[in-house]
Amino acid sequence: MKPANATTTSRPTTKWMVAVLFLMTATCLAQSSSSQGVSKTAKGPRTRRVVLVSIADRRLAVLENGNVLEYFPVAVGAAVSPSPTGEFEIVSRVANPTYYHEGVVMAAGTDNPVGTRWIGLNLKGYGIHGTNAPRSIGHATSHGCIRLKNRDVERLYAMLRVGDLVEIRGERDEEIAQVFGGMPDLDQATMETSGQ
Image (tube, rainbow, N blue to C red; front, side):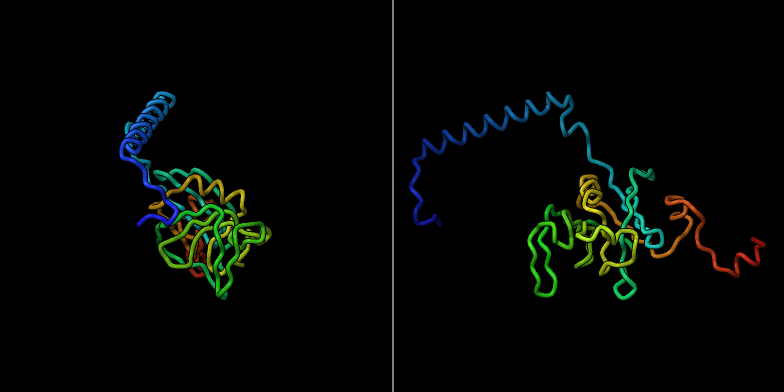
């Protein structure tokens, strides 16, 4: 169905426009390949990255092939609305998101509670995002999401893709200690019996 004000285009004009678009696309692709020196297909797929969040440390690390690419300080869920723990997958990425919560709709802007970027997880309503309250970073104050300063979430957003993994850990263990430093939490009885 065409709009009421649409005009009929003759077939020769349509064929001519398709031919021009085809040539423009081919030219752009050729220029892109030669300016980069390597075609996109020659690069192969990017390795799946892992976002590791330590609730105890209130820090996030981006890992690729076991190597830390970058660290970020974060805010995590408050005691009444804790961050979920477990393994998740990134299912959406939104620049300058609109905020929706219990009948409130807020367009992108400086007052938007989710800041300038939203990285959605496969757990409905949860994600990694910016904030309009940068002083909350380093504290347990969110409604369960992982918050970063807007400048940090913009860098993180550029590093991640849909399909990358997110691991949120509630307690320190050997892996968390290895990635974020320090000793894993040990209960007092274990420390006393081992003489530490």
